[in-house]
Image (cartoon, rainbow, N blue to C red):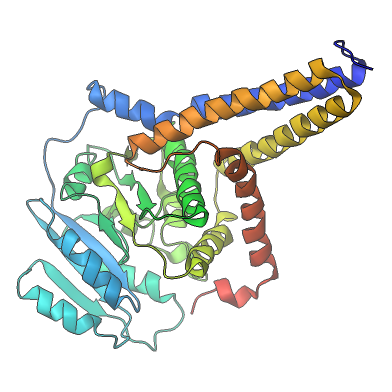
Length: 390
């Protein structure tokens, strides 16, 4: 029988759908729009930047990355910046990297390189390499990136450095993946953007909780004050997100999202490399301190419950021909979808991402928490030694 009235059970289902819809709306309007609002504040002159360019040291760890260094390192060395050095620490592997770096030094005297012995133990090679690079650095500001990354412009360092105002100890930058065709690559770009909307948005809201080592600045003083990576030497990872989680505060952290300051990550040779990176970050996320970890988890839970509620309500309503109930539940989904398209694509435009997300958004929106669960299960069932120092 067709009906346009609501019974008690339908009222409860719609109320639950509406409740989770409101939670999702709050996240999208209050947190996930922070990056575009920050850009608007910059354009309106509401953000105060430093009027000087302090000397900086760019630190890179190279592990079997000869081809990547050949592509990415020249763009870093050619930055339009008055005084900087680039320090590359290799892990001793003879893949041609050292010879190539020696050749580059002839034309780039601000390039330095060293290595860690392949026999090093009791600390992850990357943490040891970064520690050696920081100790060798002549300047007080460390710019951290990776050998598979290259800056979007020669203004990368200038834009990061403009955030080094009095009291600042950390600058969080944005990184993305090179654009490529295919649904998998588009999902990787979406997941990366959504992650940035979370951690950069939280930092802009005054609650920084992590950073990504592909585009990150912190002071040498901060590194020594917190005894470097000593609190998690037993972990293979944690040199970026855990260090920022441990040291970042409302007052000492700035965010730079200008498209010219973005670091592009070369395409992975295999999707497996991206998968391993995600598993690596998942393995350290459980060590994050502060409420943000739980707030982000609450957003994911409310999203899944929202989808469960509107789909179940709409399905039952259609079966019973209760068109008013079905129409309201579907309307909740459509309104959220439109809000999601607006916020996601506005963020993409702000950081210079050429990808746009429309019809793929509902699929990606439900896939992302499933993938997160997948990474957690990988961490749960893998040997503990795979995430420990080596």
